[in-house]
Image 1 (tube, rainbow, N blue to C red):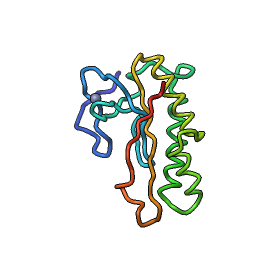
Image 2 (image 1 turned 135 degrees about the vertical axis):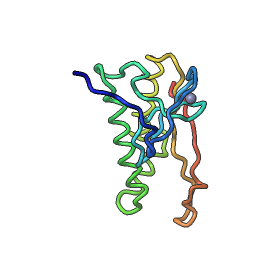
Image 3 (image 1 turned 90 degrees about the horizontal axis):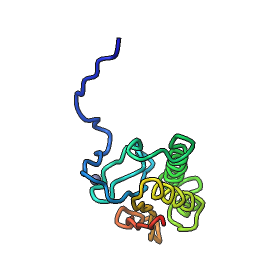
Image 4 (image 1 turned 180 degrees about the horizontal axis):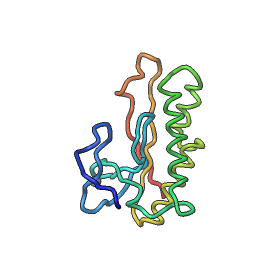
Length: 146
Ligand SMILES: [Zn+2]
């Protein structure tokens, strides 16, 4: 006997899923509180469920899931402002950090298997003091993965 499935509505805590007819390009993006896939549609910024792209590593998405976990760890340190904040902020914002290099390599993998452009969200932090560390200082910088 198979289970009965009924759709009762959207999950209120989740970001909207991309509903574009054809996604032209992706952005690798997540935050410390994000529960969704770290792949977004460049046009509408909706979430792209990973099953919409071919598997990226050993028949799974292990590389993407691991990068997301590492990114969220750094983002948590940065948000908590107590332990390793400077190190974590460098990981998030430097184009040659371990985290960014790994993310860019995942972008290239997704480009290769999907045939679509993949951009990387690089955290931009310009604040000189704690006071200036506000949302206004956070900008999206897109680094082409190729
Ligand atoms: Zn979209």
